[in-house]
Each structure stands twice: as C-alpha cells, then as structure tokens.
Length: 528
Image (cartoon, rainbow, N blue to C red; front, side):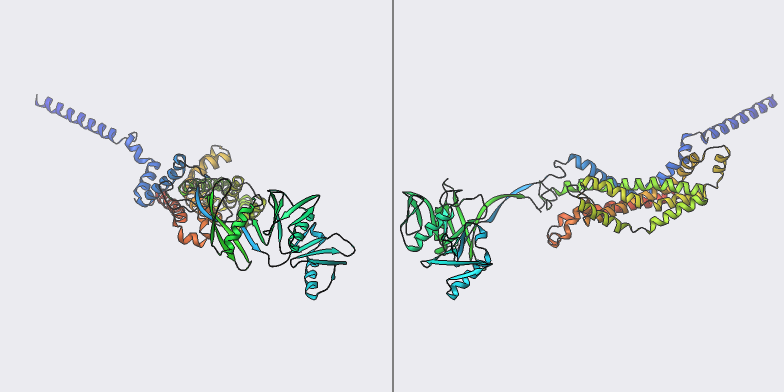
C-alpha cells in the first residue's frame, strides 16, 4: 500500500514538473508578441531616439514649424500677396510760381529761333547792335517799350519770335492762343494802349493786363508764370491772382475757395536757387501701409510692400521647406542610383562614376548659381519657373556626397553572406542592388538627408537674401530678411527681420538635432 502511494506521488511530481516546464516554455516562447516587439529593429531605433531628449526637442520644433507653415497659411485670414493701404496727410507740390526777371521767348516753332540765336540776341542788346548773325541767318529786332522785342529774319516783315518779360495766358481751359494774338496783346501792353484790333475784332486791355472781348475775359498778361505740376490741371485767373497777392504780401500760406465751394489751404515755399515758389497742398493720399508696427490686425506688422508679416512668414516657411525637401529628394535619387551601381559593379564602372563625382566636386557651385540667377533676372523669368530652376540646379549640384556614401556602404555589404546567397539563387543584379543592398543603406541615408535639409534651406535663404533666389511675390525666409539691406530698417523695424531669422535658425537647428538623434539611434553600439 505504501509503495503504491509513493509511486502515485512520484507520478504527480513528474506531471507537475512537466506542466511547469510547459508553462515556462509558453511564457518565453519566441512566438510571444512581447518578445517580437522587443526584437523589432524599428522599435529599438524608435526607443533609442525617444530617449534622446535633445533629438526629441528638435522633432517638436520641426512639428511646430510644419504646422505653422502649412496649417497656419490655411487658417490665416490674409493672402500671401495681399496688400494693405492707409491714408496719410501729405503735403504735395501743386504748382510752381516764378517772376520773370529775364526775357522769355515766344515763337511759332522752336526751330524758328534756336537757343544759339537767343544767346547772340542778348549779346547784341548789350553791345547796342541793330542786327546779329547765328548759324548763317541774319536777324534784326525792334524794341517796343521797355519790355518787348520783336525779332525778324532779315528781309522778312513778319516776326519769327517775341522776347518779353510778360506772358499771355488764356482764360478758357484747354484753349491755345496763337502767336499773332499774343503779339497783339503784348504790343498793346508794351505801348500802354487800352485796346487793339485782331482778326476783325476789337479787344480791350485794362491796367491789370486783362484782355476783354466786350465784357467777357478771354486772356490776360502777367509778369508771373504760374504752372500746375500736372498737365491736366487748369488754374483759373482768380486762383493765380490770389496766389500772386499772397506772394506779394509775403504770406507763407493762403486759402482759396474753388468754384465748387471747397476751401483749400496752400503752403508757399520759396526756392532761392530757382528764384521760384513751390505751392504745396495738403491732401489725404492712399498709400501702402509700409512698415506698420505690430497691432491686433497685424501681430508682426507689415513689410515694405504693405503685406502682413505673419502671413508672409507662414508662406515663406512653406517655400523654404518645399525647396529643402525637393532638393534633397533630387540629390538622393541621383546619388542612390549612381552610388549603388558604382559600389556593386566596381571595376571601370566604379572608376568612371567616381571620376564624374570628382568633377562635380570641383565645380564652383555658388558662382554658377549667382551667374544663372543674374541671367534669369536679365531674362525676367517668371518667379514660379525661377523657383523650379533653382530646385533643379541645387539638386543636380548636390548629389555627389550621397553617391559616395551609398558606394562606400555597398562596397562593404556586397561581400557579406546574404549577398552570396542572393547570387547563388540567381537573383538578377538590379534586384540585388535595390532590393537587398539599398535597404541596408537607408538608415545612414536618412541621417544624411536629414542633415542636408538644414544646409539646403540655408543655401536657399542665402541666395534669396542676395536677390538671386525666390522672387516677389513669393515669400521665403531668405527674401524676407533681404529687407535688412537697408540700415534704417535694420535698426528701427526689428519685426521685419528678427522673426524670419528666428524661424530659419530654429528650423535648421531642429533638422541638425534630429539628424544627430537618428545617427545615434541607428548605431547599434550606442547604449541608451
């Protein structure tokens, strides 16, 4: 009986140990999900990366910059090239007034009495000569009163020019007075007559030089020349008389009420160098809202074109990031293809591709980019097409470093056992390169691409700052900072360049931090 019990106990112990062993084997089975996660290379890389606080900080900065540039531009109430205006009270020159202290010439045609003849006429008056010669033509003159000279070509009874201190202006807007009528008016004024006959009509002239046809004023003679700054502006006789009265009285400003009842105040400024007065009018003018200080409507103010700076920063971030990623993508495509072929084939193929790489390393990239940028400026290439050319050029010049990296990695990988196995199984060469070799280079490639993004953005910003990169109306952080070429802007408008410079610095620094973090995470020797 006792033996039977001992046998049963031994059987139970054996079964219990087998059950415990089975449970233990199930707990630590390689098929267990937790065990698979622990052995996942991606999970290990991610875990190492997330333990690196500096790299995580860079990732957070990049995430913010992407949201700021892409999402911020979508929710912004303004457009990238939207211009804002404001109204400023500006004192603009309206007209000019000069008193004739020297002879003025009235001619039918300018060629009738050229400037050389005018100079010789003045010399003849000083010498008391009755005639003078100029460019093969002999001229005579007749003095009427103290202020009028009629000039003739010798042998011709009709005057070709009048030299006078007075001018004759029409009282009717848009009407031009012919030479003969001005001659008749000036002759009557010089002789002190109060009437004259012209073209069958008798005109009256008062002491103020006003010419009347009956009771209607048609013209007037004056020693002052009053000319509006704009050709389409007509100054009435009343306005000119009010202006001249203010000048004679020594006033610095005068007020005039026009025909529509609008009262306007004008400011008079005397220019001693020109011996004339500038008539200034203060008016509300619509201008670009340039360099407006930060406000609720524009948190970062406006730039020199009157555009919202915050919106320009958002769209500028888009452009800078777009260019960075596309350029690195182009570099990677060319570099991976040529580097993969070079490293796998070896021999003369490797030598040929590496010599091409050496040639590209010897190309002075920056001078070429500057020359092409200047050429595109001269050809006035569309800004959008120009941006495409810039990306293609930067990508085409930047692939050699990636090609060398891929070649070096493949040279070491192609001798390993798994590549021998692929060759033994008859897998074609292109599949061996792009299916088995290139994926093993991707970790190092990702690190290199991440580091290259920062340098590419810096290159684009440098070219845009020099005016050779992204052009208006497109914004980039580089051409925004271009405003600091003006020392006044640099010292007085901090909100123009500091935010763009900070965004550029933070983004490039974040890419470098993430690149360092990825390099450490992909390194199996790192203990994190």
